[in-house]
Length: 350
Image 1 (spheres, rainbow, N blue to C red):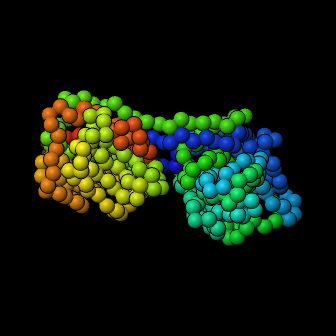
Image 2 (image 1 turned 180 degrees about the horizontal axis):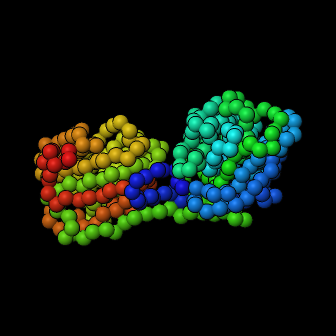
């Protein structure tokens, strides 16, 4: 439901977020202002339950088939994301922020899974199963106050602003799971029913002991995908629980792959910007005295022949953070592996 299609289970870690839309599934509730629409409940949703709605246009002339949420309080300079799950039933879809937030819009072609006209640089249509898509738009208000900005409109075309038209009484869209959250990207869906709901930040720490890790040499391998390339550190570490002794991997605040061996000073700093960093990526760091290398999707991309490792008994824990209680890794971890010896380049390639 988070919008990522995977063949195998993965660990998803996300930051704390609040869904401010208080009736995220019940579009028939008076909470939502309707215009030129009718609804049919108990439709099959992406969750596999019959908790989606079919929004159908009426047969009126010059109608605009709209579904608008109530007014929300927003702050100037913060980024917000609106998302909804939608499925084609004869019509495209538009999400519109309204005048108070700059009249930003994005049109979504639900038949072909493509973006149409948009006036914001941050909008996405993400495929799910059974014809469903997650449609989202992110924006930054220019003033603090109340804004009625989450309007969902059925269209006749994916070009331009929603215009009135004569409905046929049968076409529309299937809808499920509306979400408004403060953040530059939508996180996985948070259901609500009568009040806003907060999802706490998700962390994973405390794996391993000193018996599991080799201090003098080894390889840490990760198959990961950052939740977003948003300029925020996302770190994974082997450490002794202090900021002094750490092997750090992940995504840096300049949206580059980072691999560092640190024992009070940098012994090796490897990384850079590589292709497809916003997708699942296989990254391996080999560490051994005067022999460090970083491998990205099977290719050696950086190396160093100078630097020390750690005294025996130093490394004793694996964490999805910086090893000192901060800079949590947010994203998907599909595989994590540790090898107690420095593998050859051929072994690392395979």
